[in-house]
Structure formats: C-alpha cells, structure tokens
Image (cartoon, rainbow over all chains, first blue to last red; front, side):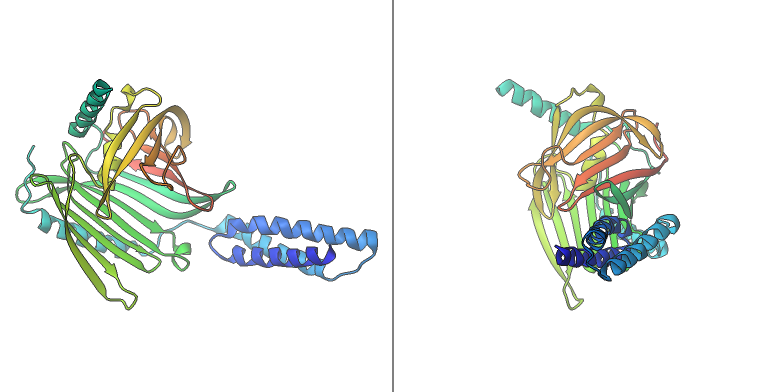
Length: 109
Length: 258
C-alpha cells in the first residue's frame, strides 16, 4: 500500500508540475489534489504504523511548487493575441484575391 | 405525410429565400474560445466574426469573415491561425465565394469554392502543405443542390431565421458544403434561457446543432445561444470534444443592425 501511494503520489506531483508550466496550468489542480491525498495517506502510515519515508516530503514539495506556479499564473496571466499585423496582412491579401475572383460575378437578385 | 413534407419543404425554401433582416455591414463579434474540463476553464483562442462591404465593378457583396487566433501563451504550444470567409449577397445571404485557410500547429489547408448558381456547380480549389513544405493543389468541379451553402454563410443564415415564430422542438435543416461534400446540418430550437454574458444579461434562444449521419456532432451536445432580439447575437456556444468540452463566450459586439 505504501509503495502504491509513493508511486502514485510522485507521478501525480510530477504531472502537476509539468502541467503548471504549460498554458494548460489550471488543469494542474487535478493531479495536485491527487498528490496531496497520496501525501496525506503516507503521513497516516508514518504516524500510525511508524514507517518512516522521505517520499512524503518530496511529494508535498513538488505539489507546493506546482500550486505556486498555478496560483501565480492565474493571477498574472493575460489572454492576449500576438502578431495581429501578420494576420491583418493575410486577411487583406485574401480580400484582394477574392475581389479579383468576384469581378465576373453578377448578383441576380 | 405528403402534406407535412410539402409544407416543410415550402418553409425550408422560404427560409432560404428570406431577406437579410439581421446582419449589417461593419458588424464585429469577438469571442473567447475556452477549454472546459470539470468546470476549469482555460482560455485558448480568440474567435472573431466580422462583416464588411466588398465592391466589385459589377456588384456589392457582403464579406463574412470568421477568424480564430490562439493567445500568445498557446502559440508555442499549438499555434492556430484560421481564416474562414464567405462573400455573400447582402440581401439574401446567398454565397458566391468561400475561402477557408487553416494553419493549425503546422498543418496548412486552403479550400476555395466559387459558386455558379446558374449551373449549380462549384469550382473548388484545395491546397495542402506537404511534410517537405511544398504545396499541392487539387481543382475540382462539384455539383450542389438548391440552397447549399458553406459553413460561414449557414451560421449567418441561422441568425436570419424567424426563431420567434418557432415552437420548442422545431427543427430546420440546411445543406452545408464542407471539404467538397454536402452534409445536412440540423438546428433544433430548444426554448428560451437567460444568459449572463459580457454584453449583459440577455434572454436567448437555445438551439441545438447536429450533423445528420455524424457520430461526433449529434444530439443536444452542441448548443448555441442567440439573443432573443432582432440582432440574434450568438452569446454562448458549447460543444463536445473527445476530452472535456469547448466553449465560445462573447467578449464584445459592435456595429449591430438593431
């Protein structure tokens, strides 16, 4: 049981850190919750059964890093669009080409 | 049964011949496209729908432009630069030219349909980028049935329907040409709902969108909310994707007709 919690906790914590640095940082919350639960499970083993493990500390450390990234990005992240000029040029060019194609068209209404 | 079918087809043709009462030149709707997983919304891209006047030496057309651009934080992750255009008659929204240029994470595709309504044919041009960066072209002549439109023109036609006269459960079918193939898209009116959005709290028409014969776009999973006024502005759209849901929320609406 302890091994399962250690492996699951580590996988979830690493996954949370990876997600936290990507633009999908909000999704890091799910593996972070899972790693916290695994960490708490390991704490139970430490206190009740006297099995000592350093894994608990590492899992909590990674989870805190992931959560710190997520909270920071949630506060300071601004949804902005880059290179609008490039897009505008492309749209203008497309319109010019369309007008050329539409020259021979007559609307029959 | 015959009578029902006859009246349905009459209503359908009437809706196709309907005059444009909703869409004005210079209208601009801006949306935020988000990915929703268990209630956690992640803003991915900005989608805009714009209309403008386009004049040739013989006629004046309306340009319906829809574009999707990923936010800068997503550009290094998965860059999207999509442009959909339809050049339509300003009075009936009948399409004359359709262009679709998509650039999604390095995948490039261009589709162009030039409609010939007299011969009911479409001169289709498709361009795709090969893995070595070169472009290959495919030209084709496609026949289309009466009333067939492209995706963009169909979206604007939906806004032009007399939804206020519809009863809950009523459905309208439209033939849509996508990737040189005709499909039937069905809009089903589900009733009215009040939606709180960036342009205010609005009473909206709730409409389900499904594609006949499709396993992906079916049932009541894909829903659009249009304001229950003369502008019928789409304020919210929800759609299912294999993992989670997608959402389109209105950010701003300018240049509305009414």
